[in-house]
Image 1 (cartoon, rainbow, N blue to C red):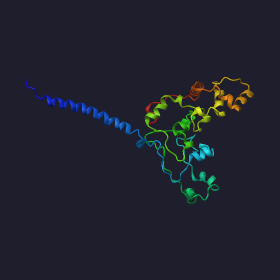
Image 2 (cartoon, helix red, strand yellow):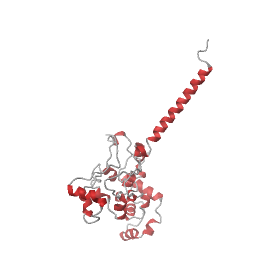
Image 3 (cartoon, rainbow, N blue to C red):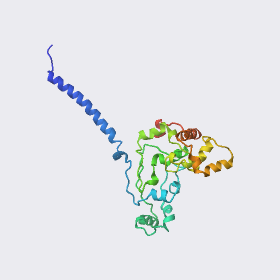
Image 4 (cartoon, rainbow, N blue to C red):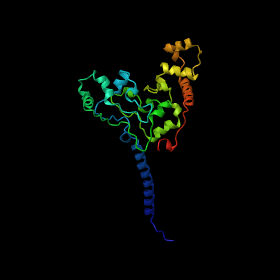
Length: 258
């Protein structure tokens, strides 16, 4: 039978098929990498605001609790943006002539809300509820990172579906005592706090006498409280908290897409 294609044509076809396959893999790999880059996720990108509000100053330096400004965070899906009244509670007396705060004073005078640019901007088809995460012992730190160290607010996490699922598949690794959900630090850095040790005592993870005076003594003694708190103790506490808070793995589509 007469050969329809020459050997050179056959070679060209092989090169074309191999090149096309490699090219397809490279293109999809580039797209896959690109959509997870900061250009698409906005991770660690500082968003310009009308007023350069500093969480570092208000949370770390002054010690203002998250709930003072985000008043609906424990009861609502949204954390809430503070009205100008909240800002003016302090700034009617503090820095009241500062040029930086001129937009705040103008908002107060004109009875018009400040316009803030959203930093954590989830797609409209994604449902997220702040209150249920806090109720289940998932702290602000897990999504917002060390916001107490941010002079200007930025998005600490990528907020991709993959990132959310990593937590939803193993929530035990992220749970903490409810009394510490508003502390913007890793749980491992909070073992010296009274709230942490109190959680150990309540959970039975730390075996101590039930004598009230001894318990108070442990709480008062920062050296004794940390001499045996290691990763294993923290892991046991998290397992107990997961049971106490009825923390389940939630990976079905309807959890976030409703």
